[in-house]
Length: 305
Image (cartoon, rainbow, N blue to C red; front, side, top):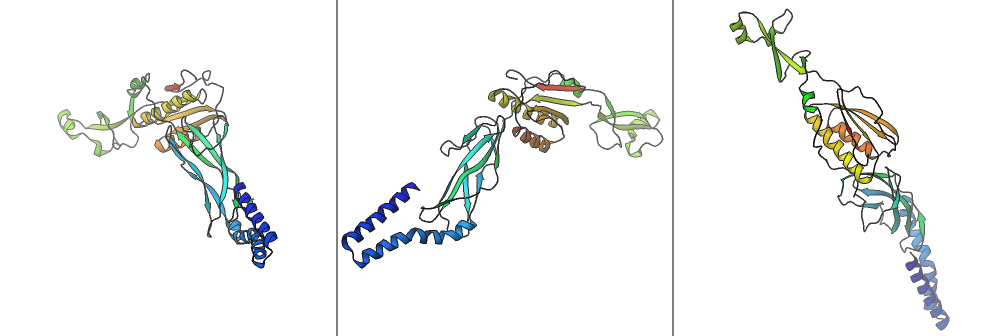
């Protein structure tokens, strides 16, 4: 804008010198037109300025390390005059503030969430001589998701999967079955006819399901950036691994806002709560001293906590 104003003042000075030197009617007309030109531009720009809207555009979710961009998008039904503004970024983990640099793009080297807001947004007239502040539509949250980090050894998981079995309520399909004598009230569709013929008595093929206790996964949202990348990656891998084995689990994560507890029953729930963790603040506390009544418990910790 400063360059455009300087160019206008230079042109205005030239018209003034031209009028003083020659004094003809066309020099006077040129000077008057040059004086009125900014106000004419402002009058023509006013309708679009009153209806102009601006919002932040860009990716909502990115894998860690993937380049990403943000930009200010203006909207108007009329030809759009120039506008300018800056984007401020706030990291949810530690409230770090920084200005967005389009040459560098989004900071995606580590997982987490950035809340982007439009700051100092101003719209100019068509000549770019006048500028007025414009409110940018609400903030935009960009989640930098971790990559899965495999856990080499899960202590006790195989023995937990081989626990006792119990009859499946209501019957139906099951991978495992138990053979037992027929009792009054049993479903006739479950009778094992071949074994009944051999044994000489009614035998039943009863569906069984595993008798499992609470599966618990815990973690503290604390540590260095590398430690958080590793821990969140392990949480993503472990959650998917347990769900693939048909093991819903309880997730407890200590964050800066308190203890987050949820029952993870499918991938959608896991993804939703992982995004919630990325928007949370870190903590300095630990879950190490808290007792657990779970049948299988895995704590994601390690170096850097």
